[in-house]
Each structure stands twice: as C-alpha cells, then as structure tokens.
Image 1 (cartoon, rainbow, N blue to C red):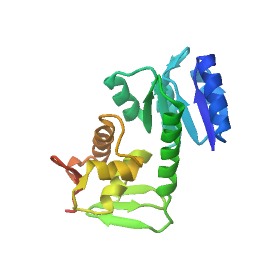
Image 2 (spheres, rainbow, N blue to C red):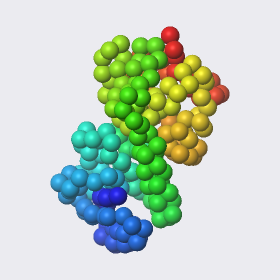
Image 3 (tube, helix red, strand yellow):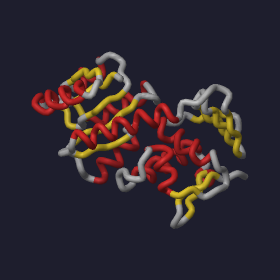
Length: 219
C-alpha cells in the first residue's frame, strides 16, 4: 500500500510519515502542489488543501481526472461545510478535519481499502435495471447503451442500489455498503447522490424515499 502525503507543514508531515510507516505503509511526502502532481503513482493520497503554491482542491481535481480508482482523503484545517462539499464534489473519497487522531485517520484509510477490495468483482458480473447496465467487473455503467463516466463512490452507490432494484434502502445501509460505516460527514451521501443523478442526466432513476433513504427506479 503506497501513500502520497501532501502536507506543507514539515513538522506535521514528519510525524504522519513516521506513524504511517510504523503501520506498514510505504509513504512519499510532497510539500507542494507541484510535487504532488509530479509524484510517482500511488494507491492513496492524503491531501492537505492549503498548499504554498496552489489550492489543494485543484490538485484533487487533477488527480481525480487522472484516475477514478485512486483513493483521495482530504486532510485539512478547512472545517466549513462549503469546503467539505466542494472537496467531495471534486472527487475526494473522504474528508478529515484537523486536528485529528492518527487512530481516526488510520480507520478512514482502512475503510477506504476495504471498500476497494469489497467492490472488486469478477468480470461478467453484469446487472441490468431498466435502461441501466452495470458491469461490476469492468466498473462501467451504460444508460440506454451510452457510457456514463462515474467516480468510484458514485459507482459504488449505484451498485448498492442495484443489488435491490426498486427497494428503498436506508441511508445507513448505503453508507455501510459504500463507506463501511454509518458515520461520515453530514452531507457526504447526499453530495455523491446529487453528483450521480447529474451524471446520469435522469435524476428520477435514483429516487429519494423521504425519511428512509433512496431507491433505484426499475421502470
């Protein structure tokens, strides 16, 4: 497991690198946005949003454009809801606000890894629901035969709903499927569902069930 730590505070970075290495991770440190974008390929990025040569949100956007499968956790002092929403919309898988404990950060990393493994499915595992065709092996989605480009989290939410098409799944059930926990940022699921609907271009396919959660329309 190779982690890229993007953190401009050398004192904080030194502590985090040491603790992550003790937990068995291979860690590379980048102190700037430029260094982060020039770093070697990795499995997971821990990304500070306040960088000396650019905005971490721009780094996140670029990294996500390069790969839908790369894990990205924003680790930042930006605690405002608008910052969390922006980070998730741009492509972060999770958002951790400083100060935080290493135990919490490690739990977030482990959860992200478990989700990646959990949603690795054999080729040929294809589900068709109404106009949607979801290929779990290839992690691709087609709507009326046309490809739809989704991020990892958007795909996982759709896949969760497609396991029981037409059934109302609770918010907690979807959170467990996708994030392996029922706790996350206040609007994490809602932000990702909104993005999923926008990319499908047919928001009625993912229906809100008031007081419960969401369902995938089968018509």
